[in-house]
Length: 528
Image (cartoon, rainbow, N blue to C red; front, side):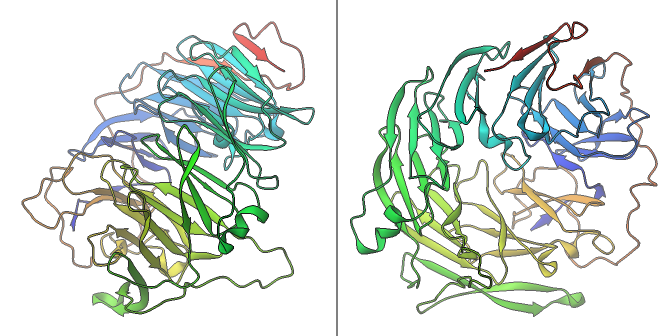
């Protein structure tokens, strides 16, 4: 592997979606670096009243702006235009917003109010604020499940609920006014999503109801209505009598839909016909064969400096995954809780509630199980590379795995362990955050940070391979442990570019149930 030099980081340090920049939120400013040179490209000065209470930090979809959320303010800064600074004021009398993020474009911000009272959409280009009543999902963990932006046109599809009924509304990409709405044929819908090509809207029923996935046209007409698979074998009975739909995953090419319920089976449907083309069964006992790799974690081995790294051994005989046992009288949770296709739509990674430390890799073209990765701890993160097929990044929970990142591909000799503690100077200040960078280099690149220091790592094995950055790689030997970097006391970085005083300000109404106030001339309220 090849590692870049380290540079200052914070708990809010993220690479841009296009893989070209890194933004780090510091106490006094936002430092933006280019990945190609790792040099500071811009320093954005923060407002003097924004010194604490930052709750979130995120990039815009097209990597031109960053969003900083505080308790009573939302700031949007441009990384390309020093004259732009947008501010949204939230009155102190209002309960804290549950989730705030960019919308379909870089000039749109969505604010979910507590208790699902409203969704506020602020447009910095048109200087308008639109409020939509009763979004069904409003928590950070579920808000995006109830809304979806059409890839081709940026139309917003939103799932709302009022008077015990679900409603789907389609909103204009320019004004966010309702273009059409309808009551879906669901009892308690749990999510919706546009297909990657934007032709269809997929809506699925709650797992507490009978299995049902409905495919709607963009104007609200039912195109296909999938009501669950028919059992055709004894081990399929869980599909008929188990829980309803738990997970719906669309392949990046839009040709396949993976549907999982409370059983150990996953149905793969052809889209948009919604005809089942295969059924994937997670076996209780895994039997190795030529086309199936089974990798088991075998504890740790001592390395230089007293650092230990998990190693994996390929199983040569039948293996039983570590299935969870019920330790309380509560009803057991079972079934698939994660399913995601790689960027080529040829591999599908799944994880079961029954075996959270086991990852199953399915080969879709051959309808077969390709690999099984067995860990001693629960796997908490699975991320396919956004551009390179069949390349998976994994993380596990637990203090002993805090600085370890795993990378797997079908040609590797099992999951590859990357111990970041050996690369960061000093004692690691927290659990390592790792994510793929969207780069065009031959070897994949990973962004790594431990809340005080960050760096970039390449999977390149040869010095002749082109890296995503241009500086010389640092040595891979263990570094001396020094004092932790104190982000709070760090000096303000300088840059030839400074922010102008021009800004755009919005005020969010502090009365969620009142009629329109004349002082908010741009605000429109959309209710059902």
